[in-house]
Length: 166
Image (cartoon, rainbow, N blue to C red; front, side, top):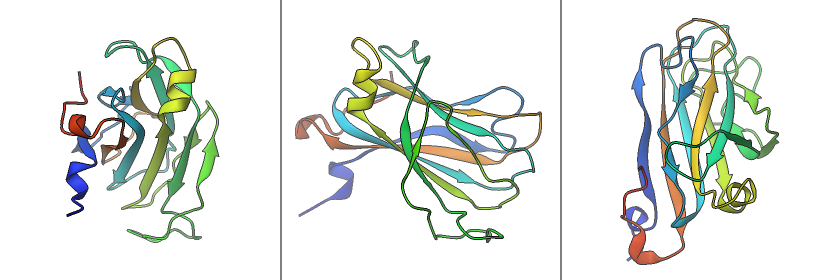
């Protein structure tokens, strides 16, 4: 039997709260990719404001050292104008530079999918295999959101259910 939860590891990287990002960056838990080839961050938004937070991905070699900004790919569910609340129509997979990308303003229920490749993480520095998502808010305004991290493509099947947060 093909069981999704036996091949993927889910981490609640930012617990859903009102004003998730506030004036300081919304930084997720650090996720250890050592046993996985791929990491997908799902950013699920509730109410948002006109301020456009910027999403970047940071890599490092330990659970306290994710400071190196890396490239990644992303999709967003706000592909039509005007964006519809709770839409499930996603954009094409898009390359993000180390500058990241700006979230779309004032769309309740927007979803962002951020794809991180372990090879890109490893190339960013010596022994790099730790990653975190950074959501930089441009002003002190409310954002309601959560971030789920999904590790996939395990290097060794027996390690799938091992912890991924240090």
